[in-house]
Length: 66
Ligand SMILES: [Zn+2]
Image 1 (cartoon, rainbow, N blue to C red):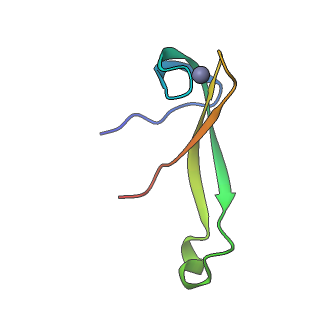
Image 2 (tube, rainbow, N blue to C red):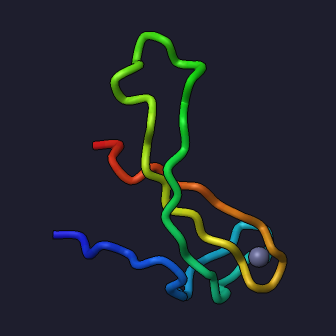
Image 3 (cartoon, helix red, strand yellow):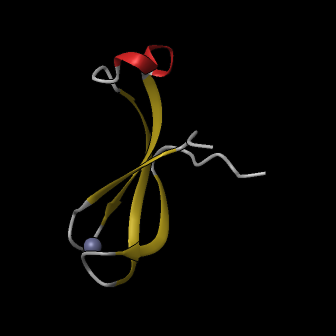
């Protein structure tokens, strides 16, 4: 079972821009994918957004892509 990340959490993850592990702020955001008409019933997807505290790059990972 994956644990639910809480908003404003902080984790240490690898940042592709920094090239190493850095501290990231984490939040969950619901993003609308309105351009995908054939997938309308799944048009609102929860994303896990991590923001690197070193370089500020945001990485969005869809949470329910199983
Ligand atoms: Zn970074």
